[in-house]
Length: 244
Ligand code: ADP
Image (cartoon, rainbow, N blue to C red; front, top):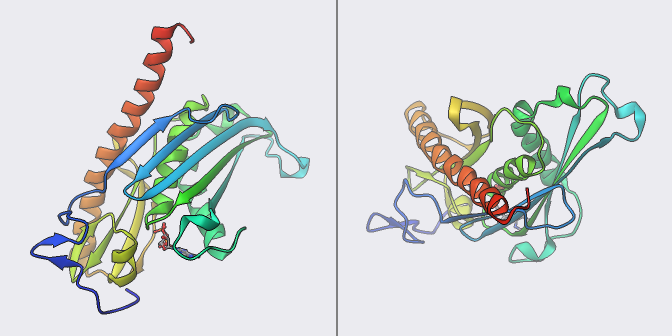
């Protein structure tokens, strides 16, 4: 997409050993922060994301309140040490954009009408970044919202699909993202196959786009299962211990 000169597929395998349709290894852990109402840690390959949810709380300042429903705020932040060269701390254009699309990806599943005039705050911190960070953040935030007991219609699952060496490939890492030809992050409600985010950087032919979307769909179904399992594991543990 941006640069040329690295062979990304050798003997049918990607440089990290994956096939074109393989996700990176995923780890999901629920309830990692004591002070948040809900939290979740997600590893997606070398990405490390942590999501914390606070609320619902009364929205301040008051003129931001919606009399009919809660408002979700979402702050995506990449730590200065999360990338090879130190990133300047604080918000920038990219993090503002990612925060906006991530909030919109989660918005449709939250039953906001239950909490008028309140805010539900979602914070996503990237401790390590290797492309696909917005998708790792959305997966973590979705589980953290559920862990916070926020009423939701369902979970949201997210993955990116791209094009490397002229071939459609799932879940690009940073090297593939830099030297590849396209990257398309999506988020969806897997159970109903409803897309809540679809972005596109680079170009696909119509056929590649359809194939990419199908790959992303299958991957979101896999991720959804892992999210569910992580929640079940956490809360069945609490029931056994008599905490709930
Ligand atoms: P995503 O992480 O969702 O794929 P981008 O495509 O914007 O979003 O970024 C791809 C990757 O590029 C990031 O995951 C990160 O590894 C790297 N990157 C992004 N912004 C910076 C930055 N300011 N400094 C260093 N690396 C960055």
